[in-house]
Length: 114
Ligand SMILES: [Zn+2]
Image (cartoon, rainbow, N blue to C red):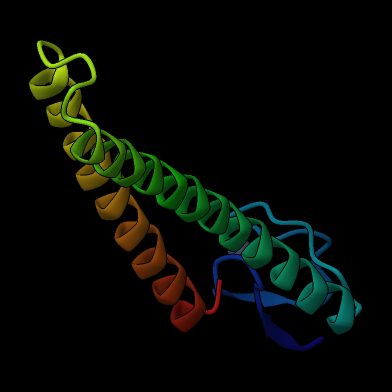
């Protein structure tokens, strides 16, 4: 009997235990399968943040386009321009902030290694 580290919680468990007694993660005797599961978990998280950052970038781009479009056409809906411009600026700010947050989270997850 040997002592190994649980791939999920990192605590020491017997290599004969079918699952981790600390966190309940099912142990695999195949280290490649364990590494694969870890990589898969990480890539799912990363792709979520990647999608989020893309969405945020699109929102920021949309806000920028609306601002640019209205600025080039001041005769268009003059009474609504301040409101639309305010909304577009908010969209731009939220989008940029969301993008930066997602990128930071991605770097953080990569460094943490899952
Ligand atoms: Zn565990």
